[in-house]
Image 1 (cartoon, helix red, strand yellow):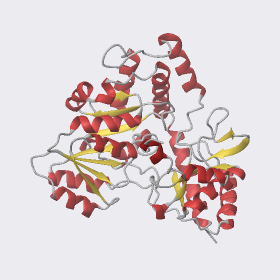
Image 2: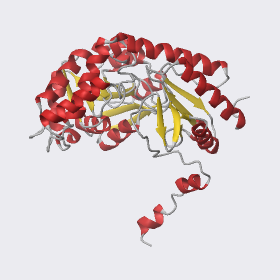
Image 3: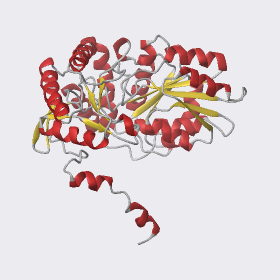
Image 4: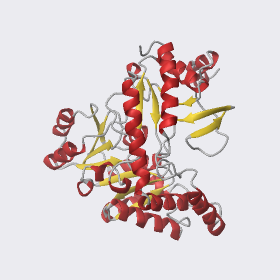
Length: 395
């Protein structure tokens, strides 16, 4: 056995969980992803999707993708930098920029490659990248790929952020990168204080709006808009894979930043451009989001109802302020067991275990859609109460 195989042979956790019949990953969905789905022979309430607007199965979004494929073909056969730019890509970028209140946007093939490409492109060895310690993995990989000095502050601890800024050299770029909505816990960043510190220390701010677009702000413009601080945020990142019912990602900023990234971000230059169907679907979802404010209202109505119900039943849900509702378990084995038992009871939820969280913070993660109903929430809560009581997580 070579050294690599010897090392990998020690990675036994998946097999251990499989042997217990608790393995929760890679389940096959047999149809469109809606509020209820067929999965592995089960009919379940889908509480594990990030499709907050409920547009993934919308016929208008589907038809936009189909029509784009008919017109442009199935792919672009190259990068945006060379032969892969369609007028459709440019149209989406212009509408996104207007929607977000920024000069320009740049669309990438995935949200992950936005963060993993933008951060290294902007920073040099004498600069600093400063991150919340619960930022998304794509931000973590982006800062690791950069040559910048890397600083992390405790989650939403603004005093610790200031201490980190005080360590930075005054004449270096200091890029603070933070999730607008933290994807596991559902709480928001303290953006007003971050902007205050930005001004005090001459920093630059980038906000990851992956879970904010379509959820917060006017017509779903995100957390930056929610706080009225869009003009103060230098870079806004987002994805199409959640509220915008497609796949891909973008960065929005002033023209100087965007033109620089257009010519230097390696994950943009050296990746095939997003497919016509995905681009057109995201564009149609963006337009629907703006035309139908009732969609956002419905999301918040069902979110507030679910938050109330889970609190009433004694679940520990932390400081969430969003349609992401963590149900803390704080035990690795029970987290896998709760996920499996919920599935058998007709509810799909996601387990969150290390490295996605601290070992003492394991949880199951719920995410709501605009088209979930109170009746579905009640059924899910009843099932989860039974599971959590059986496992002695709640009384």
